[in-house]
Amino acid sequence: MENSIAEAIGKLKRELPSNVKLVAVSKFHPAEAVMEAYSAGQRVFGESRPQELAAKAAVLPEDISWHFIGHLQTNKLKLVLPVAAMVESVDSLHLLEAIDRWGRENGKVIQVLLEFHIASEDTKQGFSREEILDIVSKAGNYGNVCISGLMGMATFTDDESVIRKDFAKLVALRDEIRSGQEKYPGLPDDFGILSFGMTHDYRIAVEMGADMVRIGTLIFGERNY
Ligand SMILES: *Cc1c(COP(=O)(O)O)cnc(C)c1O
Image (cartoon, rainbow, N blue to C red; front, side, top):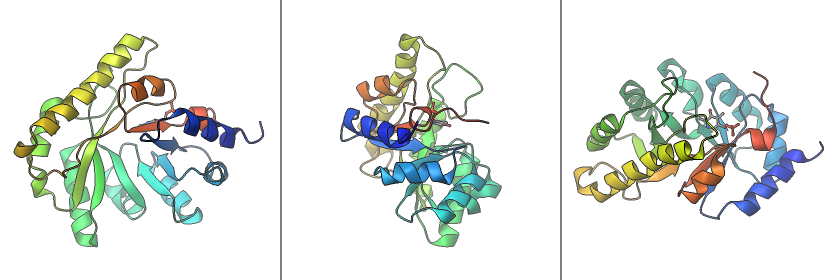
């Protein structure tokens, strides 16, 4: 289908409220596909593999805002952090500390989201509520990361009530942290970005107050792993 990427971007832009940021998830799709979306006005892209992100960032326009959304190993930070505007998928304290250290050594403050494990599957990554509350209470220890909010992935199911329940956990934890912000002096004042919703559940996510949705398949088609 010719121009189908541009069409999908256009449709999403019309559909999404203006305060919801669209992260176009381009993982496993070539730089040409990213360029098509870019030409349609899209500037924020999500990638989940360090090598692939670095390779694309090297050949694509500088004003692209790259979000890293996959599992990140600390030995791959040097591929990701020089180019990423945000790491949405911080899923361990070890990783958070390594990002902070890299930031200190390289004179940068890295925007991150903490990944909250909201799904019922064990396969998905992420922190528990208690772990997140512990980290945000120590946010002041990490001078070179800016903990901007939370990210999550719902259970993979067609049962909308399960998806809503999962997403509601994200909203509740964000609200809990915000309402107790005096306990978390290291957090930025505008803490609370919520990144949730993908191709099959982004409409529910928008309805429930997502600030960012991460959409791949609907824009770029099926991925060939
Ligand atoms: C791949 C991926 C997406 C996009 O998924 P689609 O179903 O293709 O929209 C969103 N978030 C994360 C973390 C991903 O890994």
